[in-house]
Amino acid sequence: MRSTVRKSADVASAKADLLVVAVPAPAKRLSGPAADVDAALGGLVAGAVKDGEIDGKPGSATRFHAGPALAATRVVIVGTGGGSAADWRSAGSAAAGVAGRVTTRSVALVPPAEATAAEVSAFIDGFTTASYSFDRFKGPDPARKAAAGRLTVHSPTVAGADLRRADRLAEAVGGARDLVNTPSNHLTPTMLGEYAKALADATPGLSCTVLGKGRLEKMGAGALLGVAQGSMEPPRMIVLRYRPAEVARPGEVLGIVGKAVTFDTGGISIKPSSGMEEMKMDMGGGAAALEATALIAALGLPVEVLTVIPSTENMPSGTALKPGDVVTAMNGKTIEVINTDAEGRLILADALTHAAREGATRIIDMATLTGAIVVALGEVYAGLFGSDEEWVSLIRDAGEESGDLVWPMPLHERYAPLITSPVADLSNSSNKRQAGAVYAAQFLREFTEGVPWAHVDIAGTGMVGGKGTGFGVRLVLAVAERLAQADAAAAD
Ligand code: BES
Ligand code: MN
Ligand code: ZN
Image (cartoon, rainbow, N blue to C red; front, side, top):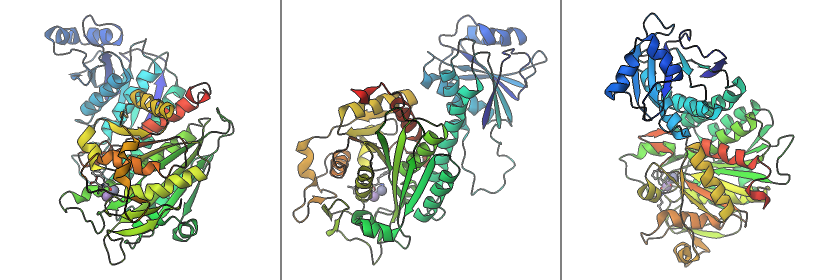
């Protein structure tokens, strides 16, 4: 969807299938565009406010037929609550819900005169996210409503350039969702590498190198190769670089790492068959890393970025890793593979080492890593772990602002006994059923080469209701925008 801006905020002349007007909570006396719509509808809106049917709560939506005084066909009054970004996002989702019920090709938003570009952007974010559907493998269905193609914002204060970010963000989140939702036979590690190359080719300033099995062998990436050896599909390590002409913080490189297991059967430690199809989504971290990197480049942020995405299938076979096998990671540490289903931390180990050695000066990794984080935090917050307080708190703030919520979880030396092995430097799993998500994070830290690092476990937030959310794209964009401000945290 593309958003455009019209300077005229005249409600009556806004021509669209659906006209969206916002009302804050508590809804009392109508003002601005809402009052204009009320006048055009002969007091129907004020009546609904009086009845309590319209209360301005975020997520609420009340639809009217427009009548002859308005150029639009239908009107929806959406609540924007207290006016936070999250409230405006909910308003966008609610509007999309109404738009999806009837064929709606064009939508016009007339925000109150005082609405900011950030608020309107949040509305667009909510609207496009809620309008998303994954139809690639569905036949034609006349009952399916086409998603709205056009959004026109009628505002004298918001500029077209302000909405470019919102449109690009929506595109990137949609791209990540498509990748996550795509079945594993249509998205192998090889295909993901090709997709990354094509995305980089289409994005000025972004370059992409895809490392294959031969290169990985030379690098000694034995942890990634170990997971991959059970599959007919060869592994890939996708490396993206964005080098802007100007940087806000010379010498600093943002490292973004994302787990991309295109299918996780568990390997020889095989998962139960019920629900296993969801494991096509075990590449949500990689999808977010990829789309966020392209987004940062497309928006031209003055932040140097190095992104590393390890990708493989995790399959059981005659060549697969077996419990008790020992692999040697790229940094020379040996790992006893107690459970072949703890494969994410293995492939991330080599990716983190690679990111650090290739010059990342701070790293954020995102991974659908543990069922334990789903138990701890559900689908609302992702788990946030890290070795550097400043870095962790910057990411947490970026999460609050962007709507991709992250909650801090602990690391501690006293968890270290969990990752020890009697035969190798480390073990990838412990049979103590304790602190599963912490365990994984504590393990990853061993591969960060002392670079300030944070780990975001998105097993609960990356897929909801069997569908990819695109979680992590907004988060990383907000992180990069913070780093684009030269005077912020890292300077001290
Ligand atoms: N990809 C899974 C984690 C996962 C679980 C993601 C549920 C999304 C939803 C990961 O590779 C895994 O299998 N983790 C194991 C680790 C265990 C064997 C130590 C888990 O969490 O059960
Ligand atoms: Mn697994
Ligand atoms: Zn996995």
